[in-house]
Length: 115
Length: 114
Image (cartoon, rainbow over the protein chains, first blue to last red):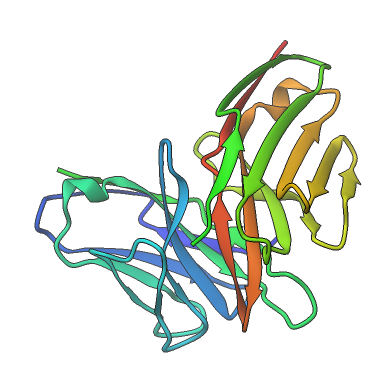
């Protein structure tokens, strides 16, 4: 199965601090995504990327930046963390192709608490 | 965007009975409908999907139905087992150049009672 690894698995941050969540995939997928998961909201898209050097805004990008320095790595950056950003964050890679629908492969998530 | 409504949010069934989860979507351009299972503390995993050129798909005890006219799709788990207890998410997506927009339902927490 496709491998997507997130770090850290758990993070406690202070309000106003900077937080970086990292994601690495060994699938050679072009597309990568960051979602957050909150009770009552399901999975919501924050940022995504088509490939190295590209980042695009998803549905809820405010307060977040993203960075895709290479095919394998995609980071989510909270420059000034707020308690409302307490959530579980999932990274995913997607096997988009010209001939079939893209399937998503998720990492195990990062549980972030902002105090 | 897109709204995907998923019901019920909580489902409890007896072992060996069937469980059904229903989702509706808004955008008629949506053409791919995956279902993900997420066990506690784990990542969501794709368990079955259906494309818009199909009305029914079955993988072992999982059945997915798609009604494009009603913009509705559903997951049916037959002969449920305690191992089926998990959170289930539906999603609707449509193709864009190079990637797909995925919109997820809010999830259904399924408990199979032994």
